[in-house]
Length: 379
Ligand SMILES: Nc1ncnc2c1ncn2[C@@H]1O[C@H](COP(=O)(O)OP(=O)(O)O)[C@@H](O)[C@H]1O
Ligand SMILES: [Mg+2]
Image (cartoon, rainbow, N blue to C red):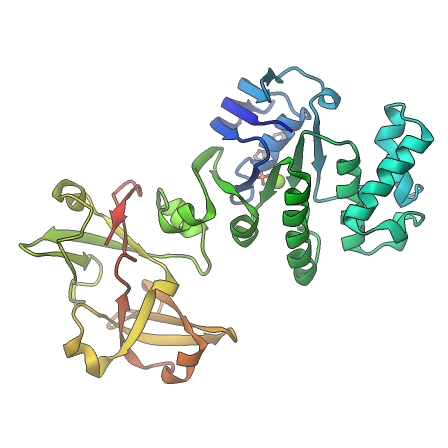
């Protein structure tokens, strides 16, 4: 096993466009690291550089202690599994899996033993004599993963390996890959654009955006303390609501106003226990709140409720285990500042489209950001 160290890595393609713009990251030995980010942000480019399929324009790549920038792909000790898992159609599963060992000059008996062992791990022993065309999508993906495992690499690179599978199979393979990681104890880097996959699989997640890493952390760190509005809105589904805001400090309370909603009373929080100082509060420009951190009270209860935001419900979406309310601030046009709430399903029948209600954020659930979108803290 080995760590992977990226030090000021940059990549400019021949057309002169810089797509990786200085990436620093330490993937620990045995870690499951997820690269997540929108399409085109440079995830595959980064993986291909680690694998040696693409030159590194600047910076240092280390696999273990060894500087790997100029090490040929076959000597890096890495194995990569792609979204399109191109198996050789004329070869059986066993031959596909054993191909690299054959090239490496292992004996027939050694190859059979190694392929057999890996087939058992992946539960595909009964498929070894089949050709790829006689396999389902999920089985083919398993063979592609098996082909990587037989090489006994120090580092596994997975580039969106589940994207071609249907939803239920993705969930199943997701769990299997997590188990496989535990079983092999290998270093794995896994690329996805799906934040649910990232949250569920990663020991840590690196959030990519336009060729840089916005934040690295455990799934819960990213969810609870997103470093900026990009991470805040990328991680979590439905995404975090984000609104213009300003804070002012009283004797005993902090008041948070929504700048585009002057009719909404400020949300008041006790000053005691507020981790932000006056200078930080003065820089507040935006507030983010997750749909699942909001709750609803009837408009008639509003007297009892300090600072509830007045909204009108536009649409309700029942998800079975929960319900989404799409609302907008009272007195605003249909398209203006929509607010999304996620409530337990048991509350679904309480609220209907066109209801006027008040919305409250749980204590600590108001994420505050400055004018550049950087995190200041929470209220
Ligand atoms: N061979 C290439 N030549 C020029 N530009 C490329 C090449 N490969 C990828 N790109 C560009 O680099 C950017 C990042 O691509 P990629 O790493 O594939 O992103 P992701 O995997 O995150 O979707 C994109 O804008 C893409 O168009
Ligand atoms: Mg990609």
